[in-house]
Length: 149
Length: 88
Image (cartoon, rainbow over all chains, first blue to last red):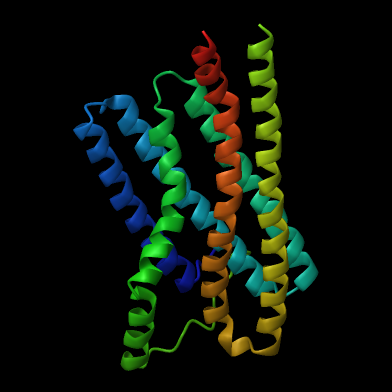
């Protein structure tokens, strides 16, 4: 299975942003005197699930764009959305139910990918990247890669 | 006793209503993906750009569903204990 450069790049951005966000969250927990092993585990697992969710979304988008069938793509996307939501809900229920885990630290990383995108858009990082790519003369990814291979 | 029952019922109804928010992104993402497929069909050379934009768009749209799920789970797991604790 070949992963498209666009998916790799965006997942890298999201992973970096989520890692920074989780680090800040853990620092806030430490400042408040609430930091313990459960908070650390919840933060790391929550961050991993948030990035994994985005990566699976990327693979789904890649598969659909390679396939090119509108109706099949729509159904596949809805199925993928349901499955990914199910994974997140199961994780959050585990975080609420297991006393060792901290539900706040498990929940907050779920919102970090959106925050990362918002920060990147607000700071104009996407535009800067596009300008740099255009300056280097790199063509945009037209092959995509094939998730079905 | 009746106060607690009303609070619990309110939390359960609220959680159910919050979970309705999960429906919209699924429909919206499916529609966006369908349109992206037809865009790629018209202009195959823009596949990378369309994939990248669609990925970010889907991630943003999905957050609405996550907010709904989180609100619903908070109403189920956290709010009943908090509100019934206030009632004593």
